[in-house]
Image (cartoon, rainbow, N blue to C red):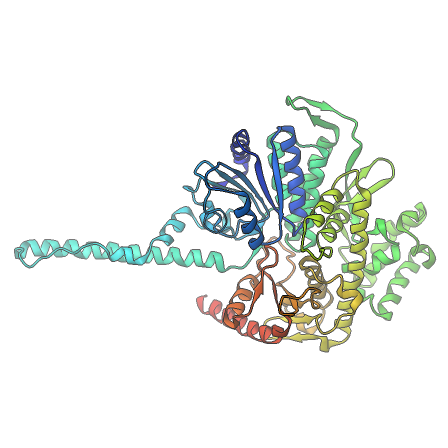
Length: 601
């Protein structure tokens, strides 16, 4: 069942009512910061309402199914919540086949497309929270219903025996038969068209809806239980989507404007359990800022935060000597000594900070650098600590994508990520930020090598490939073995090659192959991750990733082993020795898909 924004509170109340007889079971993806933010918001709401719950972090569909089988039986009513997992499969068929009739599953998942069985009106067990702005991609209920009817059912009507009937009767019956045949033909056409629309919906590729944390904030707002911390978690969720290419710039701007209007309200008031709103003196204050896109400048030097900022590094090619000299030239023209620029950014004098603010855009424009500022948010905790939403989103992501113990237990990473989003665990977040800085160095270094040596980027008909399995230092390889890290590398590769002939007609899709993963299977085989990226959305259109479909088709054709990795279908994990044949077959699949699409038009 589809739950619109104005109905969020009703869905929450159904979970609340069930919680009197059982604890709520939350399955949350360990694959992104957004899921952690959504969990922490839900945690706050449940504590205010005295709702008992259990949290189970899950890493992929197989893990989710095994945990569901372990914790759920068909003889008890359960209230289940899925955070950034489950929406893209038939939940009652593929995950919870033995749920009791009174059980309810609340789905807060940003992954799209949603499986249509989950949003059927008669499916009252599953409740999918869905933002109204996303409606344009969902087929109508009537279309879904028509598409489900098997064609064999249409011809199952018995035909009357007309041999013993009078000629007049046969003529009348013939007219009826022709009319019935016409109706059946029209019905078949409607069902065929409905089937085509449903198939088109699933084949459009993967994309992302509103952030789960942002959706949970709207729920808290309806319950009149939003606080500064809950608003901050929603901001971090939206930022997490933006920095990982899950949100267009235009949509990000619209959402941040909406959140910006809520900042003063949440900073100055809080709501008591009885619903009373009172003015408070907050120990955490959120501020909206229009900042330069320097990479983690509060935790690096000005020089490094500019050198490794994607927008600056891609344009100036700061990995090269010429690019680094251009950066030094910009700093010199602003009157900033090189030695000062290499100090901690937070230690710069007020005069130097003012010089950056007043002169950078003019100097940068001479080097072709534009759009250097972005609307963002920072949170001030006390008098000393100031963090930007990007710092927190990337630092938390780094903790989630840290190396897992030999036992394969992701729960420690989950606990650290939850701690990083708490206001009293700065040291935990700091460790994630340190990892993020190292990752950014690795990204710029590896892309710089690839751009400098054209042979490292292999060009196929419909995409280009950077294979880190063949060309990556051991130091950098440690940081580039995770889906979101590779996604950021793919994004930067597109930005760094935007001026080349290969991408003059627009950003060409990118496939990145990771270095060999550290673990081996029982037979001693090694694996790599393959990440596909279509391009960074810069307008209001929703970017869809067609690799979600073509990756799966390629795997089925080659009958290669695909190990589940997360909940994003545009990331696959395959054996290292099969990567060459996989890429060649993928190119063929892409070519056929393009031809089929052109023929359909």
